[in-house]
Image: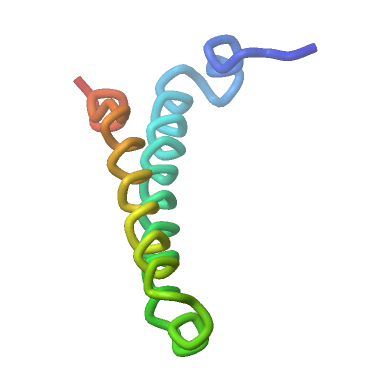
Length: 84
């Protein structure tokens, strides 16, 4: 049986702790997306990638994670993470 988050929140040491845990989970997700974007951008500076890939490939590899990060952060709702 699947239990949604709204129902399971009460089972995690009360409503207050459940909300704090959910906010931490959401904030850590945003941090993880940012760190993954930085990882992809640092790959473009590696010697092997520079030798093997064309300039066009490196340009696409540099721009696409930035566009994805902007798109994901435009959907982010800071009120849900930082409170009212």
